[in-house]
Length: 139
Image (cartoon, rainbow, N blue to C red; front, side):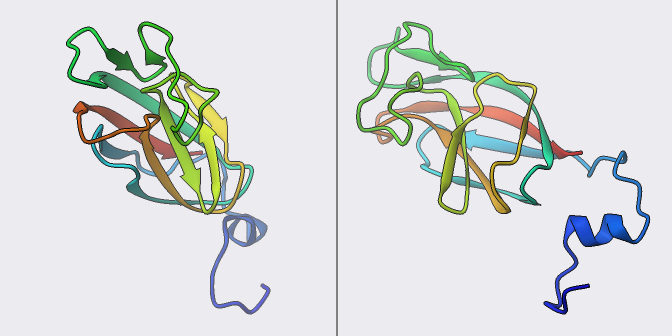
């Protein structure tokens, strides 16, 4: 429609495609030692992104320093993490330069357009262990 040689979700919808059919869920392993994991999913701002996340990660050498997708079981924060106001170890996302909390939410509205990356909200990744398993679906 706008001659950029890219069919956006909005342009696709304008041609009568049903928006109620979700994309196929992408299964992602979110390694606690990697800052950002490319989900392979591209979204448009406002798209509903559904998450089904499981798993537990360890955030340090302390066996009790564990987190689920919502963050550290102790509730602690990590001052130098990408989102310092969110719990350490929580599942977070990034689209372009926009970083945001996901945690254990079932779905969010995409805050920006672009490729979706996910990661663990921690300041020091080298001593982490484990991973979250996430299925990401755009509706």
